[in-house]
Length: 273
Ligand SMILES: NC(=O)c1ccc[n+]([C@@H]2O[C@H](COP(=O)([O-])OP(=O)(O)OC[C@H]3O[C@@H](n4cnc5c(N)ncnc54)[C@H](O)[C@@H]3O)[C@@H](O)[C@H]2O)c1
Image (cartoon, rainbow, N blue to C red):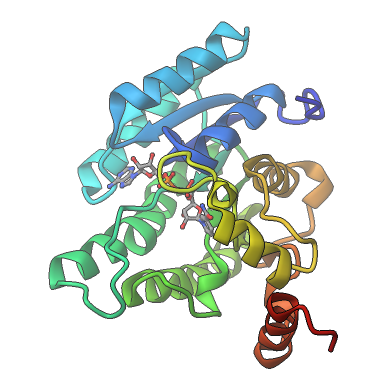
């Protein structure tokens, strides 16, 4: 991959939920940019596979098991990073739990799971990472959120609400941590061509056809495109950017529903509009 080399040289980056999906690619892209990365995930064995593949490429990566529902695991994963990398400069909050996709059918347990992993954990990670980021003289936190913070999809209510909260958490932390030289930003992807444990979203012909109609750029994002945006936000090129929400959606949220549905109808019926 043609990642800018060494823009993160000397930095230590902790990435949650990095055993799979977007987080796995962020870990690789950050390591290629010179960072020492810590792959944190509830799935220890899968996280170690990711870290080992990075090490096998001659780069720096370690893995740590962390269940982000537990504050003790959050503290331990930050301690592990500092013990092994000597410092902490970057945190990417990326983990998400598996939730049922039935609309508004979540149990209390699922609501708790969504809030614990996608909202409370980033807040607690920020709290426990703060002393280490201060020791580093500043740092960067990126929360991987979703366009579902603003727009409604098939995901359950708890997912939308946790993501909406993560946007305001981003703004709160940016405001509070800014005076310490710590920047906090969010990325909102929409469609990423990783779905259901790495089965590409657009391998389904219906998803592919619909994507071409509703996304102005006519495709889903790649995980690399999300990772490179996260990388940019963690470099000195973004030194004056904080509290921002970067939507990376190929333009899907620009469309007026009526107009998009009308175009789909005309495409499907072969009629010209
Ligand atoms: N994939 C998309 O199309 C898409 C779109 C918009 C936003 N996002 C966001 O991007 C991020 C990554 O999405 P993805 O599709 O790559 O996810 P994924 O499901 O592929 O990976 C999530 C990772 O989080 C880990 N995880 C789950 N519960 C955990 C816990 N309690 N403690 C620690 N780790 C835990 C999982 O083991 C997994 O490795 C998520 O925050 C998601 O909401 C994804």
